[in-house]
Amino acid sequence: MLRLPNRTAVMAALALCACLPAAERTTDRPDVTTVEVGQLNLVRVRARDPRTTGAPVARVVVDAHFAAFSGVDRRHVMSALDLWIPDAPSGCVAIEDLERPAVREVDIELASAGTLGLSGAGARLTAEPRAVPAFLPELSGYVYGEPESAVPFVPRANYLVWAEGDRVDSFAVPVTAPEPVRIAEVSGHDPGSADAIDIGTRASLDLVLDTEAREVFVTVREAGDLGVRAIQCRIEADQGVEFDAAWIDATFSPGAPVEVVARTVSVAALPESVGPDAQILVEYFDRVVVRR
Image (cartoon, rainbow, N blue to C red; front, top):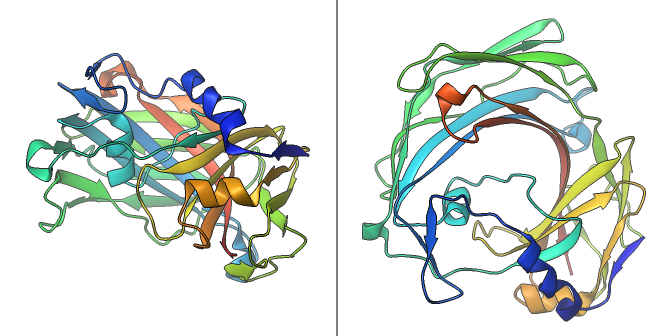
């Protein structure tokens, strides 16, 4: 069991987390990062554990973000798009909120790669680019939704992720599914088929994970909050992890419900023609909201 008895002991590990690409430029203030220009190119293949749906198997969905941005740092772009990547160092770190620029100074443009597709496990799905809604002033361009999927998740199975091409070049990349993971126990409580559970006032957050994977990523954030602030962990799967109640209350609003997500992942590189550091993240995850 990986125990985290206090917040101070792990905050020093933040220096190990180099989350910003070379295109970004830091100001004289240590808590503020600005950007002249940057890119984030990420295709996600995701499957959620079906324990809350009653479905017999997990289904795989695919989406993509081909973003060019300015006036904001990479972590804020990921927050705006509700993205996650496996960049945490070993152990756990708290990621604090950064000062956010005014909306008028932010430009995040999302390019289309045409029809996006996924094939494997005897099935196929496609997703079409959709114009960004007008009520999102920071964003322009195109996003991909998560279509209904007939593609089952099969651990260690091979899938093909492809795009027909548009402003982003076409590609076809084979990927391999990771082992699944399930949140088996939270502070002595079995989540069962519930999407949210109560563990008692000021209880520590003690997770037991069920997986054959060697490594698991755990993210904790305040329920409903899409900001930068979070606790991110990269742990050996057989360790489990325990968060001290005082650390949770110091990081988030005291007593507020928190969302816990456990993930197993595999990563594949996209062709250089797609963009710098472009990758496909294949992710199996389980999620539960914990009320304290």
